[in-house]
Image (cartoon, rainbow, N blue to C red; front, side, top):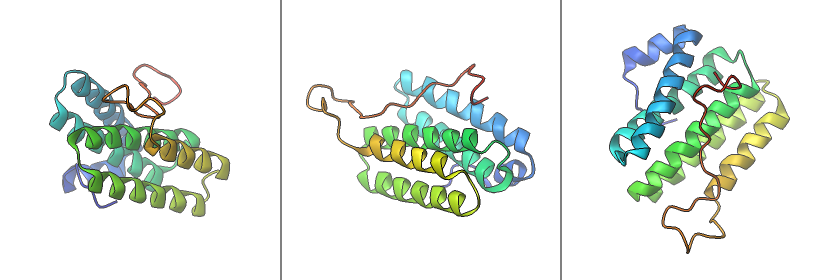
Length: 155
């Protein structure tokens, strides 16, 4: 993807170590949620972007947990998408979703389980669909990011 939140040195460290990549994803995703709850949008976007990059590295370079890695990537993308929408940058959102769909397509072509990839694509698309209640809530989104802190399913 074209968006970059990690420095080149940090990215290289994560590419060499799945453990570091996972640790960075956990820390960054949780920080993004915390910053968002505190209405610290810029910090939340930076943390969510770092989580997305870490998740992408897990898929691209390590791919040890298949479906779990795909869900981490998808949830990070949904979180970043929601934050970018709050910022009001529809162009970045469009590029983000397109890049994420391309990465999921690549993952499937590289052997990721087709049902899991298709489920992630569907979730990402549903997150971009207008909410039935969007007129009623200023921050309404069809799908909200899931919190994973402490969840053994993704940690």
